[in-house]
Image (cartoon, rainbow, N blue to C red):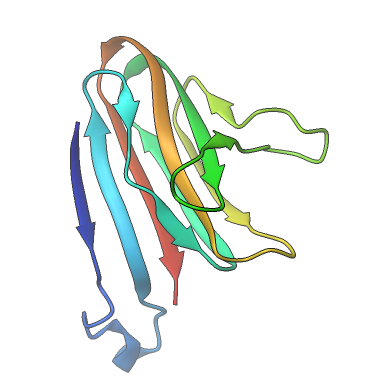
Length: 119
């Protein structure tokens, strides 16, 4: 797994009225493993891309140490994905919650991942 964690707040996009990402974690899974955690105070963008046979879970933590599966709906279904996904999540009523990707199985291919928070 490779991970690129960067702060893009100084990229100059604000001068043309576009919102700049506060922080972003991008990388890929070529084997099972976890991404770094991203601190989310309100909303975050999540993305999985690539051609792969894998199961990737979105997980959350309140201390960046103990992780549990995030829910993808009000029914409490686990945020478990077997194909590309692009979505925005919102942390309601809590804030300061960490999110990460967990590639629990990988049979073939490579999974490209991204987590980012808007400014």
